[in-house]
Image 1 (cartoon, rainbow, N blue to C red):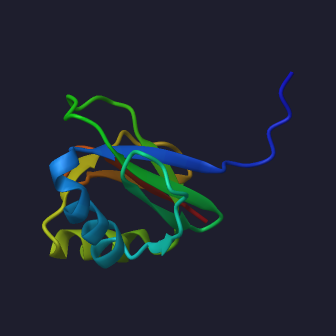
Image 2: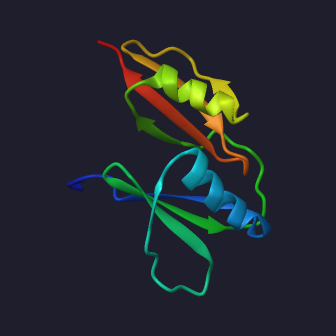
Image 3: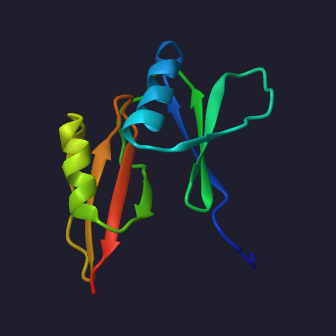
Length: 119
């Protein structure tokens, strides 16, 4: 048995030639806080998201799959409008009782789900 405490981080990848574009997207459009990343041979950036981290690194382009990361948020309608104003691609998700949700595709092919618990 494994005694999980919390999620620590998740990692997404972008093509190497688009790393700086990804940094701008995640800081300026999504609004994430950059944090210091240890000096590795590989290139990338780290960001804070609530109480977990996003680790951004490079990898040759991969086909789109169903793998994704999901985040509970508040104000899902406002989040959708904000992303729409930036021309972000959306995917509607099947309904789950008690949750409103949607996914978006970042400019690099990563799928991210946002969800809000209904009251």
